[in-house]
Length: 290
Ligand SMILES: Nc1ncnc2c1ncn2[C@@H]1O[C@H](COP(=O)(O)OP(=O)(O)O)[C@@H](O)[C@H]1O
Ligand SMILES: [Mg+2]
Image (cartoon, rainbow, N blue to C red; front, top):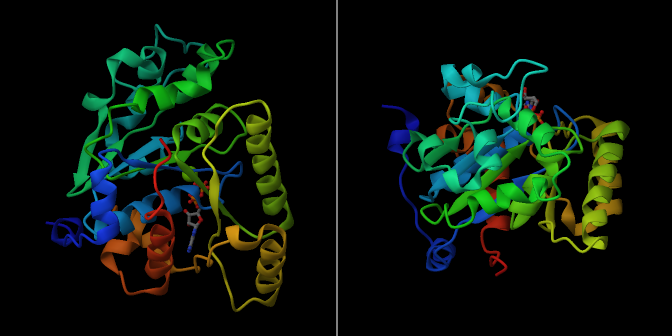
């Protein structure tokens, strides 16, 4: 029995409204830099939703599969050797193969890791499929198509992404209803944020419909350091209301990864868990665009 098993359902009005829509709210966690807090956000935000009694699917859309590797020793078996990987070498038991042939669906790939929390594992097939589909204009739109009609049993779907301005970011942008972008605060981090937002705007300019970015989330924030406070103020000046309360630095984050249980579940009253709860509050009441 884990803390995930003891988590109590706390349905609230927003959750009821959500369920009436009979469709999951899909949240893309974007960012072009490694270490910017994407996986931390995806995992602990999922914990915040589960803590309230919501049913959550976490999609690990990163070939490095950092979240999947927490739970499943076998995810690396889907590794495609460099130079090999296209459809033929890609095992059908991988998300990459399902993006090639969306009719196969995802149901049998999804694994339960606790009450209310399921994971669709990631692996190297995501890299292979981005290669295989690189000349196919439907490529980055296929994740949306793959999820369509297949997530109704969840309240929330969260998509973790890999940090390059390519297939994974675009796929999540198009599959999401809303997007959140965690970022650290150094100049190279905010430059990376700027280029991600530029890629997003470019999609809109060209007539596509990427998920609106509804939150820029300062990650791993050390408020006792004056340069961090200065940089946070600067981020707020640039992006205004989009910038959420920062997620404080906490040793609970690494512990959550080590234990495979989000901090929002093991320690819901701590500042870091409360910060993720606030982020969940901000996302939850949004109506899903039809
Ligand atoms: N709030 C936090 N407190 C402490 N450490 C953090 C926090 N947020 C992120 N980290 C650290 O930063 C590392 C990288 O974050 P991660 O979410 O894996 O980034 P990404 O997925 O964007 O590559 C984490 O493994 C963790 O050690
Ligand atoms: Mg990550």
